[in-house]
Image: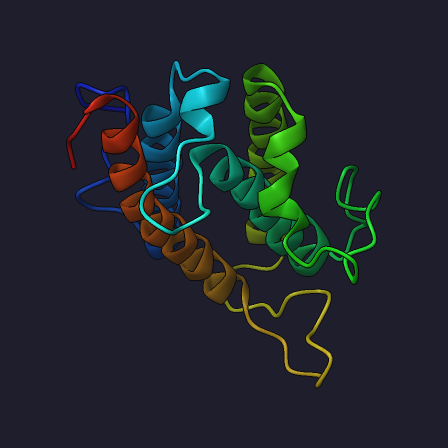
Length: 178
C-alpha cells in the first residue's frame, strides 16, 4: 500500500471491481480523517457562512452512514448505539447534532468503530454474496440495491462531504489541499 503525504492510501491503479471500489472508499475515509485530524471542540464546531454543517457533525453523520448502509441495510443486522437510542421523529438530523454532545476523542472513536463495523460487514457480503447480490434489508417499496450500489453510494457520500470538509478546514485554520 502506498500512502500519500497526508497518510491516505492511494487507490490502486489496477484491481478488480471490488478492489477498486474499496480502494477509493478507503482513500475518501482517510481524507475525512486528515481533514478532521488534530481539531479541538472549537475546530470541529466551526461553520462557514450561513451553513450549520460542521466537521464534528460530518464525523457523526458519516459514522451513521457507515452503520446504516453496511450493518443495517447490507447485512440486515441491528443498528448499534447511539443510533438506536434516539427518537428520529423528534430529530431527523440527530446524526449531525450528536457532535454537540461529544468530545473530539469520542467523535473520532464513534466514527472509527463505525468504519470498522462497516469494513467487516462489507468483507462478509463480498465473500458470501459478491457485488451483484441484493442487500438483506430492501427498501420499503421492496426494491433492493446491490452490494455494488452500496459501495458506490458510500464513495459518493464521502466524496461529497470531503468537498465540504475542505471548506470547513480552511475556515478553521487555513489548511488547504485537495
